Image (cartoon, rainbow, N blue to C red):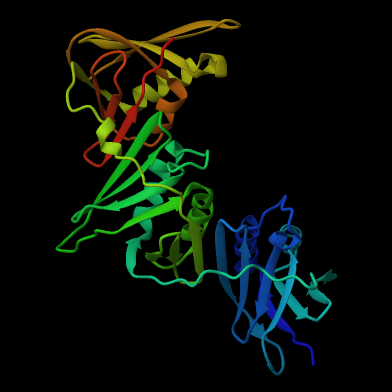
Length: 364
């Protein structure tokens, strides 16, 4: 006896699109392109993995007629997600041994299921530590752009509890972004988690769509787990220890200035129009203003003078990657304090008390 269930596109389509992103699109192993669909009594459970991230998402369904037992089929994740996106709001599914029948409006389709396919075993997950969704979303926005993409021990968002506050850290060796979240009341957070960079966009999608305010975390030596209302995500940890990131932050300075983020954003937009050959920016600093200059062998040069709110220290010249600084400035608001030591030492930028950025200078 076959099963017939009803789902709604408004609940299914976006979740399925996210699940499909967990598959390995160019996988040598066919099963890594598959999404596992388990039609139960109350939920459709969707699972996919690329062996680095394991995602499970639940979507409510309505059985039509008598429910006998759950039915599991495997389909090509990317193609199936694209198809569902084009359907009407009400969708009927009839999973069978050799095909998945889909009906919606004036459309009827029969998707061949992947026989003899079984996903790798999903890790056993456990959870013990909660973090507010809004804090996680802010941290991903303010830190993820600085994270290394080269699959090293820096290829993760580090979540480091320091008792009454949490540091969210991202670095690629050329820049360091730290977002600090103070914990209210007498609660303490002393755990450490490392979220692999390959799963951050997926995590952000799930958090944006979730109705709950808190995501719950857990970890083993090799994996980090995140759970919310209707989904679970496991990310494989990076290998090796995370470096002592605070060691690169200069404790002294010879020049300090305060400027508005909007002013720096406008200046960098003008300078970066010359393209990738002109991302190196020279900056001349004094007590009155900042002068920023870039040049391209093909298009010429641009110089922008920018006011400061206040400044003190020695005049100097320093060069940096303008694109890297703009990524921080795009996430900053109001006043930014800049501290310099010399032309070869890391530059430090602070936006309020909870957002710091450290940028290595360039040689031009």
